[in-house]
Structures are given as structure tokens and as C-alpha cells.
Amino acid sequence: MLGLVLSAEGALAGSGQSGEEGMPPPGVIWEARVREPLVALTFDDGPDPVYTPQLLELLQRYSARATFFVTGRRTQEYPHLVTRIAAEGHQVGNHGLEHKDYSSLPPEAVVAEVTQAGAMIQELTGKRPSVFRPPFGAFAPAVVDLLEQQHYHLVLWTWSTNSQDSLDNPSTEEIASRILQGVKPGAIILLHDHGGDRGPMVAAVDRVLAELGAQGYQFVTLDELLAKEAAGG
Ligand code: NI
Image 1: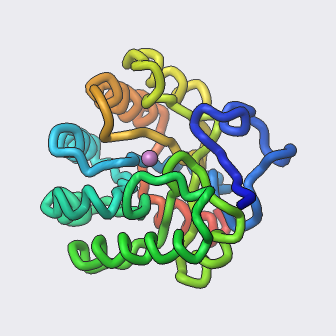
Image 2: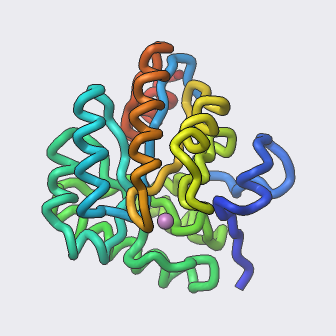
């Protein structure tokens, strides 16, 4: 099967350019065109019993909202965390059933897994997820249309703000500076709240919230960011 793989490590993610060869197919979202200084923090792979609560407390302290792309499997393991994420005003996105590379699975099977994970999330939050992020950013282009029919946006992340927080144990300083140097209005910032020691990531988010907040940035959910873009930016 022909798959498109856009990993955090990949050349595409590192290219930092729009409109060049290797860009995702139509319908895939990696940033929003908005004039106001709005950004979307996104946290993948959770929920995590240690780091997700730390992030929720941090976000509350800064009156910031974010989007958590949870897996179905971890939703089953930590239902109270998924409920809490939604109850505190954040968005719960769909990161598939398990953390699987979907580029080699038939598109119909991917959609079935996404739908299944979505039902688990909806049962806890009362809301059907509107956004799906494929693990590893890997997917076959055919799933984009199929998921659109299920009212899902396929959302990646903004290359210029790639924190690379899940690679080679970066320091707080490295994670924060990668985000701060590449940030722009409409950026979708990729972070991970599960998998290894996420302590430096949490500290980096604290710094990013403080510094971007001082620059006038607001932290919104993906739904809010996309609604702003749809309203003309
Ligand atoms: Ni992931």
C-alpha cells in the first residue's frame, strides 16, 4: 500500500516550507490562517497519569486551552483523565485506537479504528471528536476523504514549531526555544504528554505559556482556531 509518512523525524516535518514537494494532500490541516495571535497547543499519546494532570494544572494557571490527542487504549485505562480534560474546557482529539502506524493499514480499517476510539471518547465526554491525528503523522491519502465523510479533520502540526520533544530527550531549553523561534499566529504546536520522562516538556510548556502570553498570544483549542479561520481569520 502506498502510504504517506510524515514523521516528526521526517524530512517533510523538518522542511519548514509550505507549498513544496511532499506536502500533505488536500484536506489535511497543519496550521490555520488567522491574523490574531492565536495558537493551538496539542498533546499526543496520553492521557498519562503523571504528566496530563501536571499540564492541566499549568493550563489552568495561565487560563489557556489546549487539545489532547488521546488513544482509545489509554482512554480505556484512564477514563477519568479524559473526562477531566474535557471538563476543564480543553478539546479531546482522536489519536486512533492504539499507537499504530496507519500508513500500512487499508483505509477502511483505519476509519474503523478511528471510529471505535471516537466512540470511547464520546462516551466519556459527551462529544464526538472532530479532529484526528494519525500516530507518527503516518497515513494513506485515501483516509483523508473517508474521515471527512465521518466529519473528522485530519490534523498534523506546524513544521516551524516542531518541538521534537519526543526525540533524544531534549532539554526544557531546547523544546521551548524550538517553539518560540518558529511560532506564528495560527500555529499548531506538537507536544507529547506520554512516553518517557516528560518533565522537561512540562517545564517547557510553562515557559512557552509565560513568554507567548507576554507577547499577546492566546492559547485556544483546535476547534476554536479552525472556527476563527473559517470566519475569515
Ligand atoms: Ni503519537
